[in-house]
Length: 340
Figure 1 (cartoon, rainbow, N blue to C red):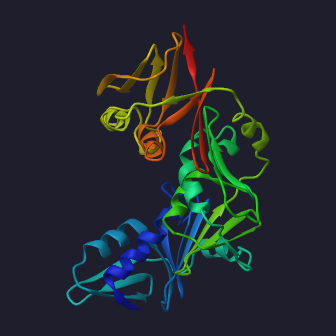
Figure 2 (tube, rainbow, N blue to C red; figure 1 turned 45 degrees about the vertical axis):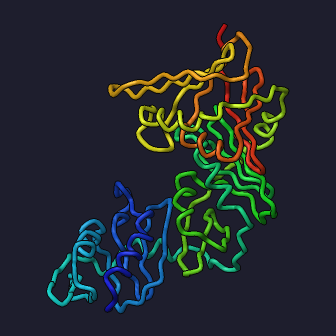
Figure 3 (cartoon, rainbow, N blue to C red; figure 1 turned 45 degrees about the horizontal axis):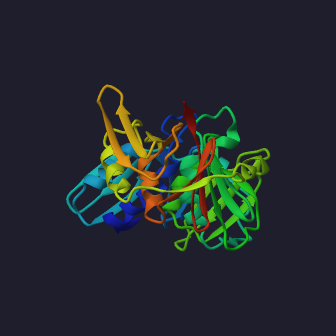
């Protein structure tokens, strides 16, 4: 098999999301070449990418990827020689130990026929993007780690916050997709999907198939929809809040973007921002706001995501124990903590 190095590198990037960080299943951390496709599989996610090759093998992903990345010649030739995958360019020859048989292919062969495909509704990917960050990372209640896709809306919650996005076109299926898989899915820009045998399959315009397990059980959607029904007061947030959030983000608690947290407190016409990163530093800022209640209310929120909301609206509805941000089809509900 001969192809451009940059093209091969791009294909490897596409299939990397399904590589296992810890190999619970043998060879789930490998790239699997199989005649007309390359596969990665980690029991929760599988990616199948079209690739014409004349061999079958399983090769360690880290070494293979880094080798291809650091080669400098434009054309790469891959071939199997016994138990070795040979990588040749104009100036370099390398060999990697490769298994000619793999149990991963047996698992992939158990997938049902992907067809018939169904068209992905307009705005579904946008809805997933805006909701996925609200899902919990605690797997005690599996449905809380999911993005719930119904025929009318997309929803996710960790029970301290709820995100909901109303779809303009109906979805043919209801399903719960693990939030981490949903985030990975966005980069593939799928246009079709099908749901069968506990899996959801997505295909993009390049015929790449992204497969994710769906979470079993019933999502308590009605319970969470009812939370959006409350009486509150509309509050206009400060015009320069966005700038303040960018500063606070630097010292926000949380190791990754989705986990970033700051506290925002409103009391007596003032808005207080507090950010603290353990063992690193802390930040406090005060701004004026038209909120004159003496009882302080505090919300814990992701500063990066709040900044995205502020590009659409600077209004929030504040109730006794919750605050609602709403812009078009998107609603985000946050629990409030009160103090005398």
